[in-house]
Amino acid sequence: MVRPAHRRPGQSRKAQYSLFAAYVIAITGALAGLLLAILSVADPVGFAALRVASQEITAPIARGTRSVIGSISGVDDTVSAYVGAGSQNRRLRKELAEARRRLVATSALEEENRQLKSLLGLQQTDRSALAHGYLLTSTSTSSRRIALLSLGRNRGVSAGQPVRGADGLIGRVLTAGPSVSQVLLLTDVENVVPVRRARDGLPALATGRGNGDLDVRTLNIANNPFKPGDILVTSGTGGLYPPNIPVAIVVRRQDDGALARPLADPAKVDAVAVLRPYTPDNIEAQAVPAQSSTAAGEP
Image (tube, rainbow, N blue to C red; front, side, top):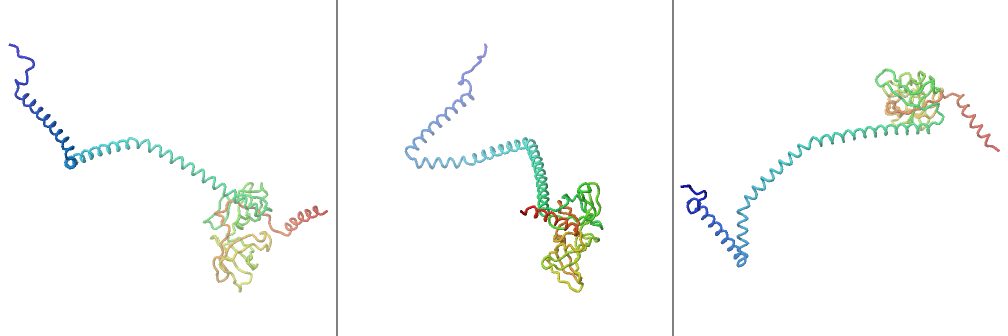
């Protein structure tokens, strides 16, 4: 006899127990829900207390679930950040390179503007200059203090002409080439400049020490009236250097004179002016145009 494909639950004890348990759970749940509904209407305070108690019981489970979800979310964020780190790194490198290029361009423009302002100020300070140019290099450790000038014989520069910056005297032209010249700096040991104290005209001689400073001595060896802060300017005595060009400031008094520091530092000066040597002939030549213009203005 063929066995039936499907047997009724009554023919299996296990199926009977499962069906019975399902009915019991359903009836119990329905009764619990009905009791809770009646309790919420009949005793709201007691129902609220019961709800709080149930929340206290389920709180640890909620905390654990939230921690697990937070961990999973953190792992997801970490993975996302790691994946996007490559593209972000490339973007930041590109922005850094662009910012560096802009910084270099801005620095170059600022330096160019500074040089142009110095040159403009120098041209306004000395309008009778022979030519205006730049100091290309200057020695700092050599026994000779020489700078390279960006002007030469093509601009009328020749040996012996004074060179000054916007802040003061630089030196004199030592040798002149076709397009560049050598300048014997004020601080060279072979450079002697007649000077005077600006506040009272006290005459003195300034001699280079070869180390960036100057020795200043008065013509009267027994008299040493120098004080720190005294300003020295060219006196024009002996020719070559025109008078009233700032030269140096006294920094320390010595037994036989004073130690002074040049007002124009060749290491920081860019724009310079080449002057005509100061001689009586130049004075007369400068006076002639002035007299001519005065005569021309007379009726």
